[in-house]
Length: 378
Image (cartoon, rainbow, N blue to C red):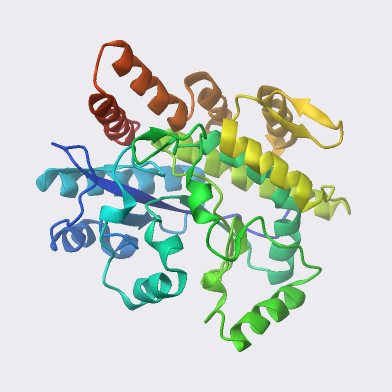
């Protein structure tokens, strides 16, 4: 069934941390030629990030999830190849298990210099990586409407993507510690609600006129209208260590947006819940991933995550079929079976400790798991 409207194209951006294969620590000062070598293989689809120990890739605009998977796999392979020439490896994890933020060096770019000057310590400790998914929606008003409704599902996506349980050598007790670091910046967290794109733009213009921001790229909500592309950009997710998990979540996201658009065509919409309630689920996803369930606001009680996922998959079954990504969406269930990256990191640490390894050796074992998983599914 064709419903017209947006094409629901997709683009995926991933940030990786670069580690020394020998020490497993973050590489503080990578070779100056590394980015250039990556650009030779990836073209304009790779760039440096805030820290020298980070690198970012972005797929082309993809018509379907199969194209997105192929392009993202190619980018990962190329980064792995180039990094390997220098004794390095990328890890697709939102924090490094033990390297310290205070030791890292920042990339020499005006944008990054301005950020650290303004944000000070809040920016300097951002040794974190994420996955951003752009979905093509070329109508500004529709982007705002879908942003308002899609906020409900953001904690569910986060719960399935967690990859940051460790920070500076400690188990934080959170499956996604990354957001505790990122939320220290202004204009982060759940998106605001607006009645129209014009209302959104008026708010942005006030901040621009006051000199707080140059443009809306400095609005870092979990979900935002992209300032550069005609897309709705989801930013809440940790970077997924395994490629298949990244593609599964991107596919689920696109299907959710199409489902909400389908409701709109039938003069229906997803019920709007207050940010207070959604924030509660956001925290639970950060703390527990999917282990302890999320709140079903209509029922007013905690519900096991597997039940919530079953409901979401049923709601979006028609959309997965229409978009040709049924297999990719169905593979979301394997995340519950195998565990998120956070679960696998904690298990690797537990197994190393049970084998009598030292604390340092246990953390290196976690990095080894991340190196292996980042290169899997390619």
